[in-house]
Amino acid sequence: MSMIEFHDVEKYYGKFHALYHINMTVEKGEVVTIIGPSGSGKSTLLRTINGLERISSGQLIVNNFDLADKKTNMDRIRKNVGMVFQHFNLYANKTVLQNITLGPELVLKEPKDQAEEEAHNLLDLVGLNDKAKSMPSQLSGGQQQRIAIARSLAMKPRAILFDEPTSALDPEMIGDVLNVMKKIAQQGMTMIVVTHEMGFAEEVGDRVVFMDQGHILEDSKDVKAFFNKPKDHRAQEFLSKVINH
Amino acid sequence: MMWQIFRDNFGLFMQGLGYTVGVSLLSLFFCLIIGTIFALLEINPKRWVRVIGKIYVEFFRNVPLLVITMFFYVVVPRLGVPLSGFAAGAIGLTIYTSAFIAETVRAGIQSVDPGQMEAARSNGLTYVQTMRFIILPQAIKIIVPPLGNQFINLVKNSSVLAFVAGFDLMYQGNLIASNTFETTTTYAIVGVLYLIITMPMSYAMTYLDHRWSGSVKEEE
Image (tube, rainbow over all chains, first blue to last red; front, side, top):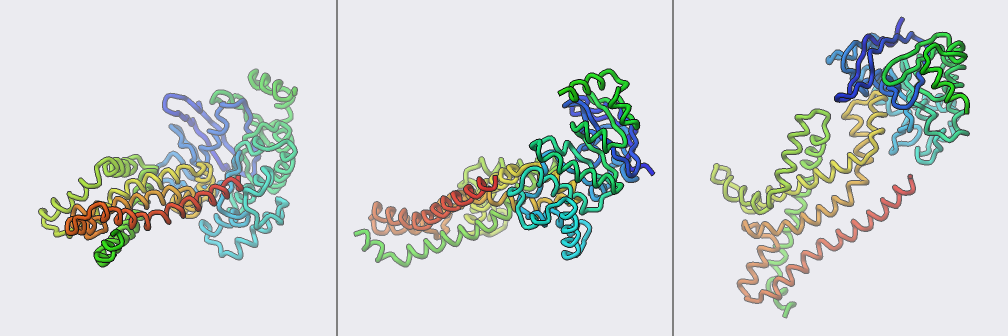
C-alpha cells in the first residue's frame, strides 16, 4: 500500500518555481533519503507532505488523504505524519517528558499516566530516560534531537519526515542521532529523510532520491549502485564533491 | 502650607485617588482582554481577519485619547445611550489603551521562534492548542515588562476623566485649585499622588525585567 503519492506536483513561491513536476510514490515501511545541494527543494518537498507548505498544483495523497483538497483536515494528516526538524524545535516551556506527552494527551486523548509510561519507554529507546525532568535548554543538540524523535514517535505516526536532522549538530553528536534513526527504520517505520549524511543514506536507505533546482533528477531503489555511480551527471558531480572530503 | 491644603481637602483628594485607581484597574482588565483578542486577530493566518485587527489597532493608536473620550461623552449620549463622565472616560481609556496593548502582545507572540509553531502543528496540535499551550506561555515573559509601561501610561492617561467630569484625581485637583486659588500647591499634591501610584509600578517593572531577562539568558 502506498503511503505517499505525488502526482505532477508543482510549487511556486510567488514567481519562484520551487518544485517542478514532482512524481514520486513512497510505500509503507520504505526508508527514502533525499539528497542534493542546498536550495534544491528537498526541504520544500518534505514540508509539503505534512502541509507546512501547500502545493500549487498537482495531486498529493498522504495516508489516503488528498492534500490539494481544501476540505482535507490538515490536523488529521499531521496526527499521522511526524516531523523532525533541523533545529529540533522542542517546546521551550515544557520539560522533556511534557514535550513527549503533550501530543498524545491533547491530540490522541491518552490519559496522563498512559502517555507518561509510553514516554518513558520512548526515552529508553533514545537512551535519555535520565533527562525526563530536564528542560530542553539544558540538553545538548544531539540530546534535543533524540527527544524530538521520541516526541514524534509518541504520536504513533504512520510515517516520519526528517528535515536535515543532523545538520545543526556537532560531529560527535551525529552518530547517536543516526543510531536512533536506524533503530526506527529497522522497526519498519516509513521514513523520508532529507540529509547530507551519505553514509546513512547508503546504509539505511531503501531508496535514494537526488534533487537539484526543484527537480527530481534521479530516484533509485538500488542504493549501492547509485552511490557507486549515479546515472545523472549532476548527481555524479554532487557526490564527487560531497564524498571526496 | 502644602500640608494644610492636603488636610483641608483630604476627602476630595482621596475620592479622586480612589476614582483614578478604580478606573485604571477597570480599564486595565478590559484592555488586557480586548488587546489580546486584537493581537490574535493581527497574527491570524487568514488575511481578512488580520486586516480587521490592523484597522482597529492603527485607528485607535493614532486618534488622541481625548477625541475618543469626548466621542463617548458627547456623541454617544446624543445617539440615545446615556453615559456618565466616568463611564465615557473608562470606555475611551480602555479602547485607546487596548490598541497599544494589542501591539505589545502581538510583538511578544511574534518574537517566539516560529519553529515552535511548526513543531506543535506537526505534532498534531491545532492552531488554538498551539497558542494556548506553547506560544502564549512563552510570549508572556516577553510581554509583561512592556505591558507594565502601558499600565503606567494608563494611570497617567486616566487624567482624561477630568475633562468629562469623571471625579478622578485630576478633576478633584482642578476643583480644589479653583476653590482655594492655591494652584501651585494643589497641583504639586496631585502630582505626588500620581507618583505614589506609578513609581512602585515602575520599580516593579524594572525588577521583573531584570529577573526575567536574566533567566532568558540563562536558558539560552
